[in-house]
Length: 218
Image (cartoon, rainbow, N blue to C red):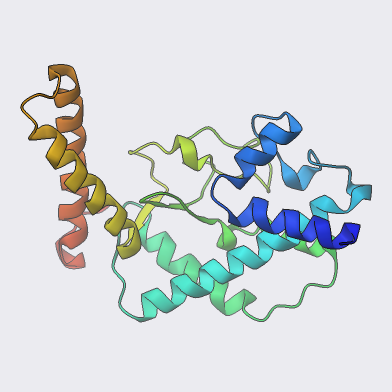
């Protein structure tokens, strides 16, 4: 395998495998590795450009899948539900089939607000750094700043929840229900999990309501 093929393969795994960036940060000694700024290698090495291109492809694939889900009737709830629908429709219309002509163009397009949709565990971040409650990966005025999905805060205004996210939340709810029902569970744990159970129940209730019955910000 030549060096170029190796870089592309490495970029694919770091971008697409679970916790790929965390693995990269351990490898290269940075708690918040900024691949696009060359922390995983100099620009002369070519790796940051390979990663940026892989990031671009992955985002377009996700947006295309999100558009298909919306067209098939997927429900979306959460404070950023309207922004989610708008970005998916606009990004799919603007970027589907878009041809990239240079690494610089790739990096520039990755900062486009329409592409700032990041899928996490049981939530989707419709990222706006001005409203983000998490610890940002970068500074708020950096066009390539990204959210820290591992640090997602429940009350963040950037959260949207698709039907796919709700599947994860229902599984959590069912697991916590069993914990709370356990008479041998320590009292402190019982109270903590009961509080989380109520929070998840509210999320599920809001998502299951018809859109016209939701209040603003739900």
